[in-house]
Length: 588
Image 1 (cartoon, rainbow, N blue to C red):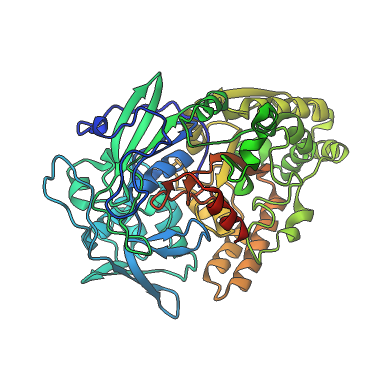
Image 2 (cartoon, rainbow, N blue to C red; image 1 turned 180 degrees about the horizontal axis):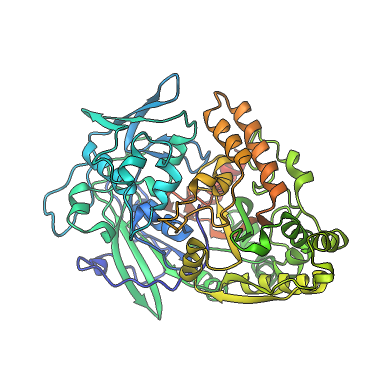
């Protein structure tokens, strides 16, 4: 899961800060210098993010912006192809899965080195021990809590991971290596394990650097190195620079990455982002409303989009992302499914999409937790009848059946949400709708992103605003958050995914059956069963499915846009188009 919202987390500069060598103070889309191999190497790509990363600990990433940053610095055994979203080799050059699906052999590359660290003057080469240690670290408590990596990837899947977490053993039984081959032994078949290992939380770090206490110094093997923070005109800039020793090359043998540096500018609102974009200080702007896009098109800029070649490119597409609220099922008022359904039927989602989101949402007709038509072969229409549309009379009837006619005697509760973007407006609209339709009182409790996450993990609150941005390309990724086995026992109260504490053995069984299914058709059938059970039980209020609107300068070449907003910058370069080039491209 990648939460995408605002955080006030701050970081101090690292002692090995070397930013001054690389910072390009002029417009961020300019090319400066030429690479040794590729004709158009060099330059800086500058992007805006609305919040700083919530964590530098790879194993515990739960937010989009941490993932975006760390994916450029760290690498896993496998990657996602930014075009197809299929799993491709990473630190492992290849892998094999046994016939029963319970054993996977990953063959590690022999030419990978970690970024330099001031405490380790020698270049540290990637070894199988680094992989083993990184997984053991992921399966170890972090601040007396289970890491997200353990809960979402290894728990109940990797043989011996649970015993290791509980300190019953000093090593993970199902994890071993021989030469450069690393072997995973699973308790049961998990068809999606390679996809899960492509997540940020499964990235590999150096054992020596981790053991020396530098886990958050951001030393990986990726195409870009972390060079530090700098405040420029009141904004925090996060600087990444080219890894000169990166092992990968492009198809014709040129060294990667092409860019000299990446700059992530932390800018909360889209208005200053637009101003900086128009001044050439940003190469792309996203998260725009249709009104902002229309305003740009109406300011004499239409030729910049329609020219041959164009200066600007508009991208609008659906994402694998769902926005919703979660009921805390530990609260007595929400333990009656009729109450949860009444609240679901009382919400006019179309009004939210039109009046608050200004129609920037994908498929307001809510079906299930999984975005409709997101996965080829998955029948999302099968869950449509289990979704919740606006039916105020049915909502009142259900609430009365639950013992609260006209809302009488229903206790007041609060909606918890992060204090940024449109979330306060959405919460206010929902609170008003529930007052008007069900005659129940709802208060608003806005807070920082970090406080919201903490309250969700600890079960503090009744109703939480959250979101789910896919980490890997499978319906399972959306359903996992309701898996009851991810609820910790009483001695480990904090939870990382199942914030609602939802539990239904039928749902869990359907998800277990899907994981062990031998073919994707059977797998998707079980996912559909699980999703229908989930929607019938209504532990969530599904609000809308996300889409993105981006405007990018056309000279940003080979930056691929996909449904997961998963970015790879190692083959991105900057070059203005000629008329001839654009015409030839248009014919493809």
